[in-house]
Length: 185
Image 1 (tube, helix red, strand yellow):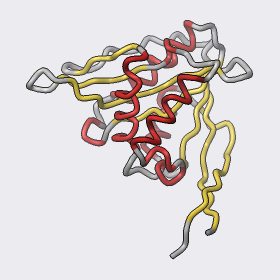
Image 2 (image 1 turned 90 degrees about the horizontal axis):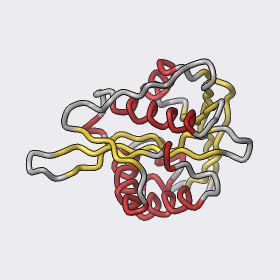
Image 3 (image 1 turned 90 degrees about the vertical axis):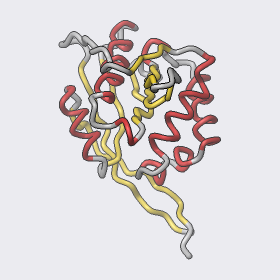
């Protein structure tokens, strides 16, 4: 066994100096507000979004369906869990079924700052401004809860996510390193 270090950025946004007006999702997509009955749907969207991405190496639970389910249960159980900053994105298929294709969770951390958790869009639904839609809805939830700042962490190799966060107004506050145990063969 050995350790590998993943470079990550903590990015922050000031929520006082801006009014967040979240867009509606594109035609065919629907935003679903938090409901406890949607916990497994969030876990499924999280798993489908992250299972083949670098973040499943950084956080192995993201590459495992049961790990995503446990993670959602843990997030939901946090004292600072914010239903108003937690959203699920669904696509209405041709057969009128809902395909869960995006998720974000928000919590109030112990300092009173809004923390974005696991913003993910499934690969086949990317590049449609869905991440922007989810992120802005989560930030609007932070504002509605009276939070003045928000933050998230992103793996440095995730250039697309870093561009999205920068467009929204996040700035890099610091660099952190996540140590992950890896098995050598």
